[in-house]
Image (tube, rainbow, N blue to C red; front, side, top):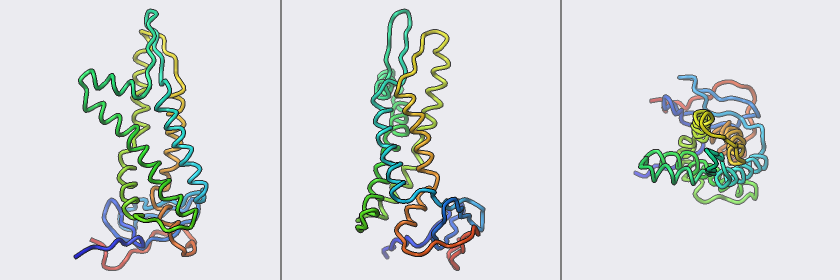
Length: 220
């Protein structure tokens, strides 16, 4: 038997409790009645504001990945490191798994998050039906779990501290762009995917900040 998608329902990722999806006001938080997990947060921005934020993240991601992250000067030998140069150097050194994970979590998955959100938001603003909305939202949820730009930033900062004592380090625009990207990605992820589901519904926003109402018979 084929299972039909139910965009009107919301499943807790921690305890699998199922709730009816509801619209949230800006800053309103929806919690699971069983385990207390946050199910969704009302976004402060409208759909066009979220699209502008996502487009800004796309531009900043391009700047961060193509511009020098850091320039090292050791005994007159200058070495300029961009993101892709660093990935290639890591790969050539034999650390294939580290290079693949860094490329995926700091570039591929953040890019997927941005592109999927643009793919979903554009038809909403144009009031056109989006084909493949449910698969796109599933892919977005998966990409959000693996988008780890902030982890990459921590690794870069640790490397800078360790090399600062033996070489002259010049911070490049790529590193500054990654700092901005971390903030933008955090703003985009602040409401998870709940706000995008809300935008597809025409129901009026519910008042209050109470926990979500469970669907009888769906707890398991």
